[in-house]
Amino acid sequence: MDIAVRALVLFAFVFLLTRVTGRRELSTLEPFDLVLLIVVGDAIQQGLTQDDYSVTGALIAVGAIASLQVLTSWGSFRFGWLRRVFDGQPIVLVQDGKVLERNLRRERLTVDEVLEQARLQQISSLQDVAWAVFEPSGGISFIPKQ
Image 1 (cartoon, rainbow, N blue to C red):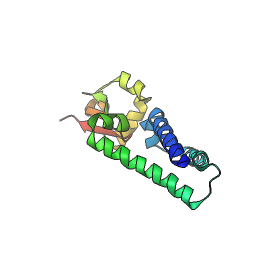
Image 2 (cartoon, helix red, strand yellow):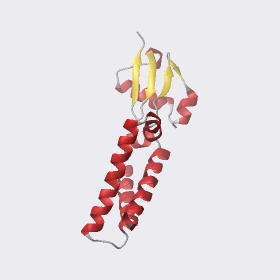
Image 3 (cartoon, helix red, strand yellow):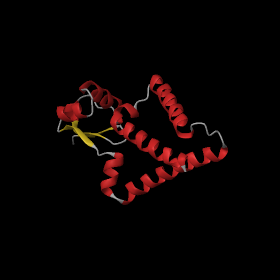
Image 4 (tube, rainbow, N blue to C red):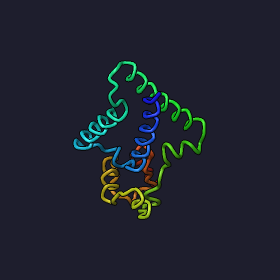
């Protein structure tokens, strides 16, 4: 039971950590970020199982984390307010060719980064964009002007 409680606490901590880190950082993993992610995973594992190296302990830990993931997935599917908490909401970055600076600051993005993403989608200027939306997945969707 102790492992299941630790799994619940660590699951909540990792969830909070990913929400605080932000979508931008999680959507573009650099090599260093990948190594850091592996180190964090190892540190969490040590806190999760402590000195319990048994197969039963591993099954309880993995089962508890998988159950929590299924529960959060079901909760976000079933309840709209919970979906906003777990997944976040899309944020408009550009409207009718004008950059919304407040929203860029909120997401710690620069205009250059938005322009880079626009170029990757064959858009040469933000003046040609009706909407640019920062999606909960970390990507930017561009809707061109008609």
